[in-house]
Length: 113
Length: 116
Image (cartoon, rainbow over all chains, first blue to last red; front, side):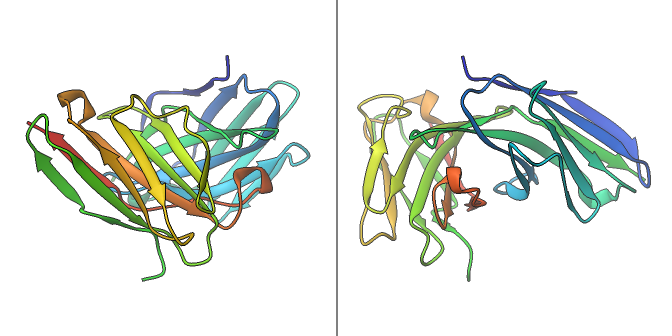
């Protein structure tokens, strides 16, 4: 069964600290992996998209990694800001003709002053 | 605006009524998606359109749900005879091409549907 699991479920950190969010998937065939940020009451916003051959991709203070062998990804946030408080969602696109996206349930991050 | 627009932003209706949700995608985006997000849960795929065609309707929860897209633009999601379990945020997203082409999806802010 195609699944995306994220950990931790929630996380509280102090402003200025770094953190790393984890994503494990069992999606096959694999097309690409995405990280989204979803602020409360808003739609998700794309942070990164990585294909099979990409190991790392950055978007400002956000750096995503992908290990296609172990089917794991991480999202590292550097020098966190209060505005980083949001839900971070890992999404894997199923390869082939389905074009289906499998969503994780997200990690809820709270950055405190 | 240049983003995905959804209307209404909030909808409260009585059980048994029909509702129609609207999505205006970004101009030129051929792919359009509908998702449902229940409180505190992840996004649940409902249906996607490639142009005006919906190749995969398997995510629609029941035959009370239907969707259409016209002019490769506006899409409407219709829920007939609404039930309380239909209460959720319904999100629409569009992308230039299908997900397999590594295109980012651009989301609207959703319609918050509450069934009394």
